[in-house]
Image (cartoon, rainbow, N blue to C red):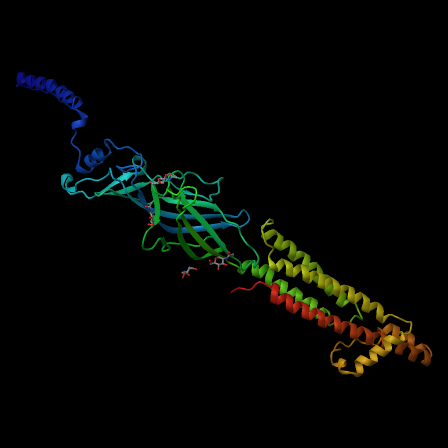
Length: 422
Ligand SMILES: *[C@@H]1O[C@H](CO)[C@@H](O)[C@H](O)[C@H]1NC(C)=O
Ligand SMILES: *[C@@H]1O[C@H](CO)[C@@H](O)[C@H](O)[C@H]1NC(C)=O
Ligand SMILES: *[C@@H]1O[C@H](CO)[C@@H](O)[C@H](O)[C@H]1NC(C)=O
Ligand SMILES: *[C@@H]1O[C@H](CO)[C@@H](O)[C@H](O)[C@H]1NC(C)=O
């Protein structure tokens, strides 16, 4: 038993290292690879990442499809960002194989950095954010050499905003894509024939709603270079502002303070209520103007019309305050009215003009004054009442006239300057 065991051990000890040596010395090149790895190895063996055509005059046609995921727009900085999956398909003349030689494998995954990929640049990119036009993803390779890559990309570009009808504005943002270094004869970017833009998984960004995306191919032929074209793919995104918030904060309150101004002009000037209301309205105008000032870009090319409306309304309110002060001083007059005032009053109140005078100010003085005047002689009292009546009639006529004018001006302003949601 003993010697047997020793022999067995010896055999084992001497055998084990030998197998290890055999493994180490194995030539890695001959390692058994499965067919997919072998195919990958074979097609990349002498691959060159230059433009993948056998004749340099051949065009590589790259088809593009955008699957939009998310859009954001910063109107203060005028930067528009589109997050999307960009499907690109082209034919690589060096990446085809015969499936029968490789166990009928018809498709292969390949890393984008191992092969040539088209460089699609955004021409109106925001240079501070734009990373690079090369893509990093895994692509799908077909046995006839068709390569499909779907990188996930965020493109940021400059988009001038026009704020005329703020907050019900619609912005058109346009992106221009093309090749930075190749002509259209070398790399031809085109759209997929069906569904060049896919919106299936799209979500709206904060504050904006995407209305429509249109795509267009600009051929890019210039008189300078008849033999070359510089085509561009143009995408126009139509965005609508979600106006609920700004409308609640600014548009509806603007209408309210306008109503306040108009109604104040119907009040009697006997006490100070009318003056207070008008001053409050003037103050509100300032507040809304500065509120809108926070919300909109300061350097936008056109002024929001609601801003012009508030500006004009502020001037009207100021006119209302000045009118009120004038009327208050008229009713305190103790000098008899000049003859032309009396005859004008009579002419207006006796003719059809009397229907236009609809404000009726209280001719009596406030109560304490009345108590005082009761002590005075009756003749004096009559005189005084007549004088006051003349002036108050003038005040009524003036107030009605100014009210009608202001009402018409506001009507025009509201029609022209209040932004509407279409
Ligand atoms: C946006 O484009 C549409 C359709 O092309 C056009 O009707 C609209 O006026 C444009 N809006 C702006 C603000 O340019
Ligand atoms: C590029 O593609 C467009 C549209 O598919 C086509 O009209 C144009 O002739 C192509 N240009 C070249 C140089 O092949
Ligand atoms: C987008 O706009 C184009 C051109 O203005 C129009 O033909 C198309 O019907 C619109 N699409 C949608 C979904 O509104
Ligand atoms: C364009 O091509 C034509 C013919 O191939 C050639 O005669 C002509 O000189 C070329 N023009 C330019 C500007 O290269």
